[in-house]
Length: 320
Image (cartoon, rainbow, N blue to C red):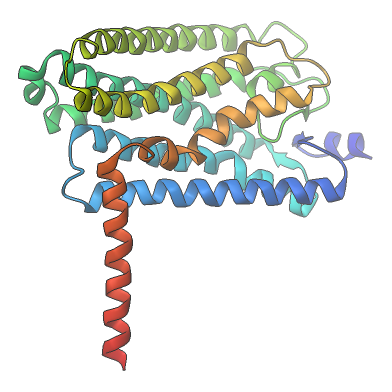
């Protein structure tokens, strides 16, 4: 039945996690909870970094861009996976798959670029404090973010064009909950996917260069910080740098594991979990990771909540 449906429709079948109807609903509810948590957490970060005048430094500007990215990133895959599970229809059209690959690739690359730029902020502040205001000028920060978004768009166009230039001659079944490029390449039965591998290799080399740049930045940061006699200053630096280092390591390691690992005809639960780790978990944990040990952000969040409560009480009193 599945084979007949997919061969008569111009699209792909996403197998997802399970064929069992009860499990499909359970997975949809779990994804819905994670999506709402990510939506709420990133919206809070965007709100407080926009409204609070104490959070207008370059670090918070980049954090706002990262939250905007993560909101978009998780919205590319999760809502459709929820809809497919609830409707019991795992079919995705050819056009939807093209758009998903384009936006997924573009946002993933832009995120790597933003994470790299974010590592340069503490590096400049700690290693070149006298030149910080000149280097991290608001105009320079805006141009850096624009360059990150543009480079993401270019990589998305190249990767998507190369991916869908191949001929899919096998049954269009994807063993994932979204249009995953490694799974798409398996559907080709010729060597016309070599262009995709070339683009992927180029992007991987640049991503590796970004990771090396981030690693070197933190080597210089930590070597400088360890010479600081102030325990308070040391704690402040580590509370700022360690969350970012965790996000970078987690996102890149799980993404590399998913894309460099040879694909199998029957992916295991581990393969699906790795996909969740780099597509769903980082956006969901943003608020916790970046605010847990940051007093400025926790203070801004408390002020936002108190202001809303105060406004609500005044409105209620005026109505009475």
